[in-house]
Amino acid sequence: MRRVPASLSLSLSLNLSQREMAANAVTFGLGGFAIKNSATSSSKSRPFALPTSVPLSCTLVASAGAQVGEGVLNNHLIGTGIGANPEHRRLQPTHMAKVAKGSSGLVGDDEGVANELVYGTEYGRVDQIKACLYQALDGLNRGIFGVPSAKKSEIEGLVRQLESQNPTPNPTANLGKVGGCWKLVYSTITILGSKRTKLGLRDFINLGDFLQNIFVAQGKAVNVIKFNARGLNMLNGQLTIEASFRVASESRVDITYDKSTITPDQLMNVFRQNYDLLLGIFNPEGWLEITYVDDTMRIGRDDKGNVFILERSKEET
Image 1: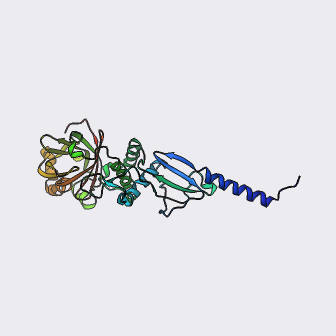
Image 2: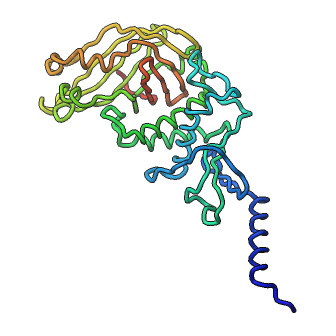
Image 3: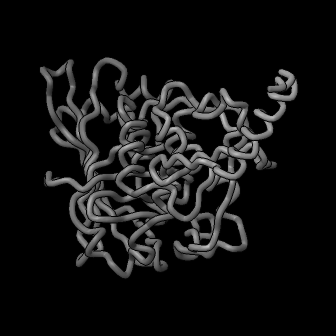
């Protein structure tokens, strides 16, 4: 029997391996996404980097969400899904997009196979996106004292994904879902630097829960920010802000400040000198776009560019 030269054997083996990989592209599902391994596919998409602090599935979900915010939402195939605000859009079921290419250390890279993140209208089940979001929010104290830019981008990507799958695209026509008590879990409002020092929020006073009670029939909203003062024998108190709202569009409400109080008087004495500063941070006046709402979570964006994530609460304000 004639022996096949080693060089020819190696060439045949490589060609067969390439053909097999091209003909049998393997797709690995990750939370509604897919990592598509293909030796022949190409993409002009931007490089995709994996943060080391986030599990793989959540990293992919957040990164795809960031791509949605930067590019996919502006595609002409996608229709407006959230009222009059063109910045917030909902994917139509025909669109597909590729958002990543390159070696990332994922399955198949040791074979020299390019990895591409491929997604369509389902970026991941809502419960999976929420789980990734709560994981990203862990330890951030609602973001009130600042969030690293990379973490903030990750959260924004996850928020945009939830907004793209909003089960209530006309929330002001379904205010029953909006009414009731909510607890803030994240906001891009921050208290930093001299503001934090002036308000005594470094060592003297702790921030408690941020609650919002919406009374649909009365067109009223009551925001409660709870405090406890370590320097006053752990005195508990709260800032209460009452506001009125009216429907402005299918997803937007206009908000008017009515009044505010701090109780008890001892806590008011602490904040009196900087009360205008405190109120300026938490005053809700302006408009609010309700970009996502279901039975347990609500997301909104206001006219100042802030993002708010709230979860349904049984606690009364």
